[in-house]
Image (tube, rainbow, N blue to C red):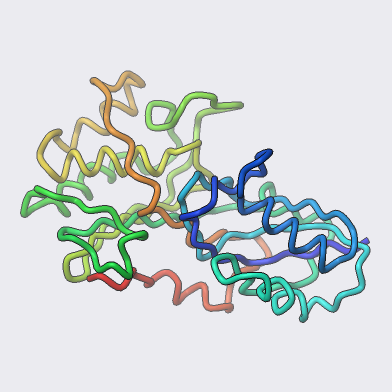
Length: 264
């Protein structure tokens, strides 16, 4: 039995999230269909992150076990021959004990906002942020800064948390290119819909509907003052997953960190 690990890119627009669901097109289900045909036996994959419906990835990591004999350097070519909205960027043999989810030490997500109607070639990858204040970037950065460190993030996640709601937020950033804003978040892991809920807060703060300190107040008090709309999934990308052995290093992942949709 061999364990292989892959780095994936996918456009999440037509997928009902990563996780397999009966009767639904999902990233996991489609990838298992392709790999089962390639390997000649049923394949089950495990992913580093269970992205929601409509969420994209440039650096998702999965692993699977196979008794098939396909050379690892042929896996990407064979898998990618099925279609172009889900592609394998890299494949290799996994070391003993590797698990795409449980071996990961960091995940990085980017969320893209555009200050004017986006190009039709990028409209699936950025959310229109209308009526933003001139100082929106500064306000968003100020809102995120106090959240760094180990915290209970249950007030910025959807219901159904299993296990501890504490996560370690390692890095935050807000940058701009032309008319586009990018929110960057790196943590050991994220609660369900946590990035989209944080993006919803930042939209409110950037528009002046809420003050920057209110986000930290909500997280620390674990009692948010009224509902904040969750941001749409199309602006969210799983950019990178990091592992202790450096998997994902040196494979173009550094260039991915500066990727922008083509509507700036």
